[in-house]
Image (cartoon, rainbow, N blue to C red; front, top):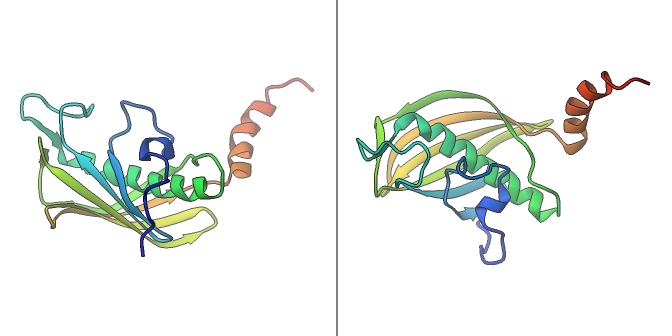
Length: 163
């Protein structure tokens, strides 16, 4: 069950990254528990290697993380809230079938939420190229509520202010 994608802001407005750190190109489908993004491998990517005409395979983790950020940003947008800042806590069993993603590849990035508890979420992610799975991973992320984020950031500042 996906969402009709017409009136949703562009993916780049849903994630809190700035160019050139935005690596995913578009949001294809998003729902309660899943997201599907697409990445076009080309030289506009900051990690593109002009010699090999490719992007190193480990960058796939960041593709997955940004797809999850897009999912979180979409759900924040639906509630008229700003895109949350998420913290990638870990990535388990990142397995990739390829050492690099080649120029011209159109990659499909899928993430599904397995569980969420108190801002801690676990997603199972995969990267496909033309229906072939190239990489899989389980991502653990922490998306604090705005209040919690204020506490985390605010505490360090309050301590410095003379009372």
